[in-house]
Each structure stands twice: as structure tokens, then as C-alpha cells.
Image (cartoon, rainbow, N blue to C red):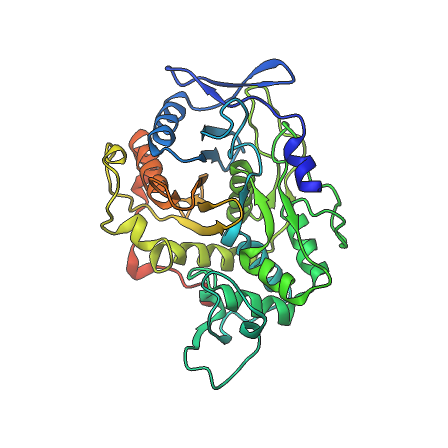
Length: 388
């Protein structure tokens, strides 16, 4: 019910991008100018339009200032209103694993521990959470690999063993998500992502172990907007949280709140870098992939070091396929946070978030080639397990 009220609350009109790259939205009947980079805004708007999702968004922001550099949306369901860039319409999916892992690190989990599991590719059953030595299809991995390889059952098991609903709720609120009726010591109303006031939504079960564990793994009722995901990426990069600056006349509302200690931040950054160097986003960002011809207009080499997290969720009820890539770059010296979210029909779709993200990152690096000078030396790839 609360989610319905959240999504039906007074919404701004969709982002309007001019041919020159200026962007604005109408809020409460009044137009407001966005403080975007015109060249990047125009490129990303064209990109999301040719990608033809049911709903989708591309959001880039400067990490140092929090200024939103571009926010491009496409919506074929309700084109008149703001879409997935501004509203929490998309399931967070495995992006929420970052919140869960942050909570686990806060509890002192050893990232070198090994966890064995089976199943859980598209859903998690109660039997998946119980160790059963007779199961032949077990896969055993270290804790530090659960995020890069997006291991659902591993994350669910770890949450069930080391966390409680109150601890996960506290971490979600600490990182800026809204948890209704949350039972934690964190602020009950985290600051919104921007002065626009729209917020994420996370429902964490408190009386159902299986429901709690599956939510921790990314299968729960957790929704993010593109802005929310960029804000989370910025927190992963800096260790602090503060709202993004969306409008041209926005000023910082408050000083950044430190939310991650150095150990947790370094470990999470290592896991996100591993996602793009040996995990679920490696092939899409660095390999040879087949992409629609409309997305081939930019240089296809994305070899700047990127720290990111993928996410995939199939909503059988709404027949929708949700995909994410969010993160920051360069990984060694974070300067830009980004999020790409694509919501497609479950059966009829054109491209997913990873392909769109690769083209978007290439577009950004074409406009700002100085960001591409920090190449990733594979021999020097940092291991999160070596970080103290």
C-alpha cells in the first residue's frame, strides 16, 4: 500500500531535452531547469531513445560535487510523467546486494570465508538455505566473490546467518533507502536523493526468514530510481552520503554523512571492480558482444577501470524484465557515478542495461577523453581480500 502511495504521489513531468541538450522538468505546474552537461545530456537522450525500452533511464553525476551531469529517460507506458530516472519504478534486484554486503562487513564478516550453495538462479527456496552435503551441484566460493558473481543463495545464506531484519534495515536506511516501519537506530526518514523529494523504497520482511534472506539476495520488494542508484554508487565511491544536485539552482542541503568506514569502503570497491574485470559485467564491457547497430555509433573500447554492480529481475506478474548497471569510474580515482536501468517486456525487448551502459560510457569518454587515460593494468588489479 505504501509503495502504491509513493508511486502515485504528485509526480513531475518527464524530463524534456532540447536539441541543444538543455533539460528541464515541470514540478507542481512550474518548469525547472536541470543543471546538466548539454553535450552529454543530448547524447544520452538519443541513446536511450534508440534503445527503445518500455521504461529506462541513464543518469550520470559528478562525484565531487554531487551535480547531476545528465538524466535521460524513455517511457512508452506513461511518457507524460517522469520515468525510471526520477521515480523508483524498477526493482533493485542484485544492486541491493551492495547494501547486504555492507551490513555483513559492518558485522565483521571474513571475506576469505568459503560458502557452498546450489540453486537460486531465478528464485530461492527454503531448501536452498540449508546445507546438504549430498547435493552434488554445490558451488563453493569465497565471500568476496559473492557480489562480483552475483551469487543469490550465497548472499541469502550469509544474511540468514549473520544479519537480522533490524541490522539490514539499519544499513538500508544508513545508505539512503526508505524502509517503512523500520526498526533500527538509523534516521527514519533519510534525506531524499535530490531536492525533488522522491525516494527509494525497501520492504524488508521481519517475521519470515526465507523472505528476509531472499530480499537480502535481491529478490525482494526493493525499488530504486536511477538517481537513487547513482547516489548509492557515489556513497560506495566516497564512503559518505548526501543528496545529488539535480536543478541548476540547487545547493548542497547538508554536509555529507560518513556511512562507511575505510575497510568496508575499500572492500566494496574491490568487489565492484571485480564485477567488471572477472564477474558478471566483464564480457559486456570488455569483450566482443553483439549489439544493435543503433548503438554502434561511438568508439567501442571501454577500458577505463570501472567499478560497478549488475542487476537482473524478472517480474512474472507484470511480465517485465529489469536490468541494471550502476557504479563509478575511474575505479582508482572515482570522479563520475552512473546508473543505467532498462525495463523491458519480459518476452519482447531490444537491448538490456549492459549494452546500453557500454554505449553510454563510450559516449562519455568520447566527450571527456581525459577520463580514459587511467587504464586498468590487469596485473595490478587490486584484490578486496588484501585490503585491511
